[in-house]
Structures are given as structure tokens and as C-alpha cells.
Length: 222
Image 1 (spheres, helix red, strand yellow):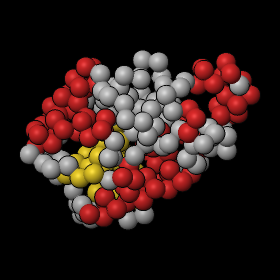
Image 2 (cartoon, rainbow, N blue to C red):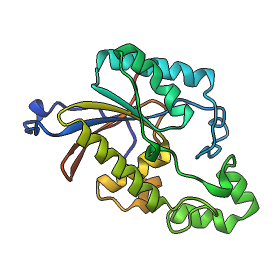
Image 3 (tube, rainbow, N blue to C red):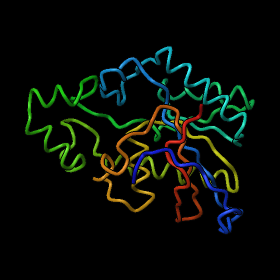
Image 4 (tube, rainbow, N blue to C red):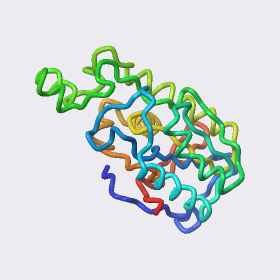
């Protein structure tokens, strides 16, 4: 599956029926941080947004003005909270915070880059690229556990908002793992199938009971 922007198609136009109990989740990665330029793994580190990241958050706020949602959920990490603030302000909503939407803990790779690992330990870097789940970083959270907690969090959110549209602001690796889990894609494929989630681009997924459908991916909000 490519990360080329895919525009949503209305269920009515496609001929699909939508259950009134289904929930539409609009998944957005937080804005750019000070570690993005060098592709450093942020994980559970509290990393600040750049000026560009703050501008991206404002763009997300303008996007929800044209595409209103009924609720906003974020992880408990500051870069996600700050990225959701303009959307909440635009719609007059109080954000909900969910600890299980936090990014994966990258262990010894927090604040480091994959290129630095490759220079220090080429075999470890190659093993990670081949299977980032079986060969995750030393001291890191098991990606399968991260996928399970993130998926469970999204299902709880969907259950709390039947028939509604919900903006969820979280993190790149967690969201890619969760998308794989919901769409029955092996989580070990998350880097290949979803190579990149752009900052504050929106991916739309519909949850209806145990069923999940990806309606759009990486749609820019500006």
C-alpha cells in the first residue's frame, strides 16, 4: 500500500451502507519536532515542536473547521497534546487524553538515528530493517505489545463515540502498527506497508464492531 495521499470517498457515493453504530476515526500524527530534521527516534522522550510543527498544528485546526469532529483524543505526550490544541480551540472541544496512545519506547535508540546504529552495528541495523518486530531495538517496547495497546485504545474510543467522527492525534510508529493490526496486516510489515505518516496528515478509518476499513491515507490538511 502506498502512502500517496488518498482522498476519502463518501459511503453514499460508493454505494456502501454505514452502520449508525460505526465510528469514523481521523488519525493524525503530531507536528514536526526538533528531532525530525535528523530522523531521530523520539519515542517516549518529551521533544518540543518546531515553529513548523506549530504551524502544522494550526493547519490541522483550520482543517477541522471544514471537516468538523465530535471529539478529540490525544496521547499524553506533549507534542501530540500541543498539535491537537488548535483543533480543540476551533471547535470548542475539551481534548481527551489516552496514555495507551503514546509512542513506542525505542529503548537505546531514543534520541538516535538508524544511520548511527548502522555505523556502530551494521548487523543490528540490517536485522531491524529486515524485521523491525523480531529484531526491535535493545531495551525497546515490543512492537507487538505497542500494537495491542494502541489497537485496544482505538477500540475503546470508538465504543465511546458510536456514530461519531473523532480526531485522534498520536505518533508515527504507533499509528502504523495499529493500522496493520486493525487491517489484519502482519505488524512486522509496518515499515514496508506504511513507510511514512506525514506530520498532521489525516488518515481516515471506520470501525464497526470488529470490522475496520481504511478510507483514506496521508491526506494533507493544508
